[in-house]
Amino acid sequence: MKVSYGHTFKIHGVLVIFDMKHDNNKNKAALITGGATRLGLAFAKALASAGYDIALHYHSSTEAAQSTVAEIEALGVVCVAFQLDLSQSNPETLITRVVNKFPNLGVLINSASAYEAATIADTSMALLQQQFTVNFFAPFMLTQEFAKSCSARSCSNAVVINILDNKIAFQQNSYAAYLLSKKALAEFTYLAAMEYAPNLRINGIAPGVIMPGEDRTEDYVAWRIDGIPLKKQGDVDNILSAMNYLLNNKFVTGQILTVDGGEGMNHQGLNAEQFNHRDHS
Image 1 (tube, one colour):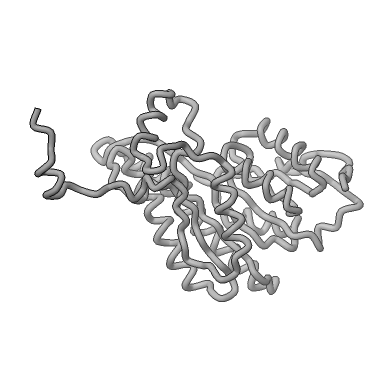
Image 2 (image 1 turned 60 degrees about the horizontal axis):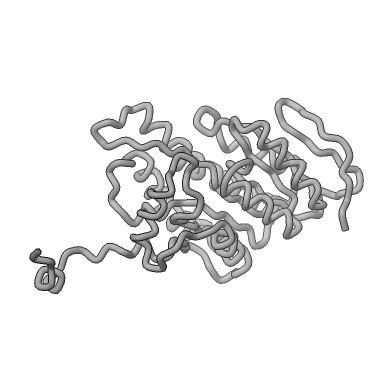
């Protein structure tokens, strides 16, 4: 049943949809960081379609956030957009703001990401801090505050999903700060799953070639696909299937689902058979 939710307005920079018919105190809710674009947007729309009210975090994508709120409203759930610069603010305050609006917040998807290429030699302190603040420190503090809030609210089956990158399987020094921050987030996923069990399940998803950046050429994508054992590019539905599995399987925690067609395991290393059969031409 489609429901009309009335007026949209802003309070302290927060885009709010006000609904007298919908009871936020009863409906399940999810917070998605970076939820206005790319994979975050896909997570938000999929969860809304499944009946979740949506807390949509965004940084600077104001127009995209407003458009997403309208799309999600049309699905018959409540959506509130929360603006926050994760690199400059105390990210844990976001949990308090969201729970004030959605008392049944039970899902946190840490999807916001900062991505910039630089070798170790070319990485400045400012770049290192920026990549770690958004990609590691923010998910760390959000998860910590979410766990505190879940404990205070006696949540059952609360879930955190950290969005990683299949690059964590490699040693790509061309992305030194970015990759180290994602590797740290992967290790945090394991540690946090141990610390917060049994009340909170914490897992991760490491996507491969799913949504290449707009600056990536067809030649680049074809080159990447050549290194994927399944010889094809993935799509958003592959990632959403992983999300649904982690949400619905209550006996899974501390796991990272690598969704990349096998690319992350495609590093055999040099061996004697390859040496013996090498091309001598």
